[in-house]
Image (tube, rainbow, N blue to C red):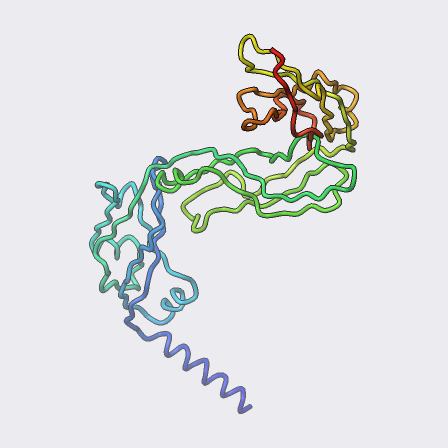
Length: 300
């Protein structure tokens, strides 16, 4: 019985306190409505300090959830150079935002300035940050690609114009021997509340095939030799090794490669030329020549 009476007394005390009027200053966030589509309001920390007088029951609502003031960008603001200006009277705010049981005593600041910028839509490419460790004898047929290969960014021109590409998070794939298709998050710029992205993740894809090594003998050609000069050089062919998928192995011939020696790049006073690979098939990887020097003599 004692506990019951104590509970009743506590409830009566609470209702007595809440029924009294109190004066306090509270911070109101700004809820922006009807912002023109061609403009974006920069994410400034604009707030209003409002002094109110009302009974305790009303104050409960303000303390339970963060209070907001609605500002209509069609009816409540004036557009000036680089800013939207809100400059409404205390009486206007009292009549439009609060009911009769709440008395508005003061607002600070008296005027609010919202910086804005022109909306920009920009498409930027994706850079993949991935390390792929293939199972022995396997490799990617072409290269890793992202799906989609680019992302649209919408936001203030001053921010969007500084972004030239987006990168994926660093990922590692181990013992890969089948086609890749993995969703990976993007590294988005910090403080992106003013920016919108068409996606925040992409899919890394790659066609993985079984690979083998091939070797071909490729003839060497001499270019840029002086007119009237005949050269005798050795060797006339070099072995070129390469890594290629099984599906393309039979389609590659020595006509797909070209090795030349530029006479103008002769090594000092020595009779040596450096062979250069100037043509190779796109399907071949890790191409190497077994010969690094070509000897020559001038016979005429």
